[in-house]
Amino acid sequence: MARLIGVIGIGLVALFFLFILKRIISFIFRRRKSTAPFHEDLADVAEDIAGASKVAATLATAAAYFAAPAGLLAVAAAIGLAPKPLIVVLLPVLVAFAAGAIALSTLAKLYAKSVRRNRGLKKNDA
Image (tube, rainbow, N blue to C red):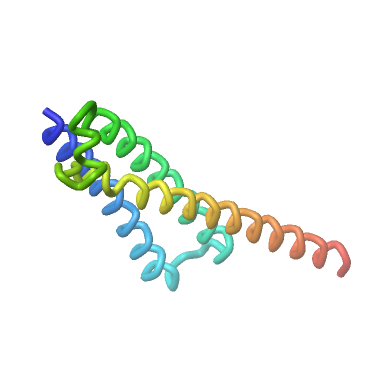
């Protein structure tokens, strides 16, 4: 049962990371055709990536909770005598990626807000 939960968890996380990859690629190649300002596109893409990574990390946490070894098997896994499910091993990486994506999203939003304010002040001064 733990193996099935781990496989389902990894599959769902992989779908979210495919969405993230697709969003990044579409941002890079669509940039030339886009009518929106760069800072707005950047903030939008960063927000989408942060949201998807938060959901992926949450699903991975739930899957790792149910798939993690318990009792004596947990002791054996900690020593290295029993294998850990892959979702349990990947969870710290997924959480770190989500935290980084959230930080970058916040920076992109602040950058977009700063550009909007600076452009607004320049229009009022002229």
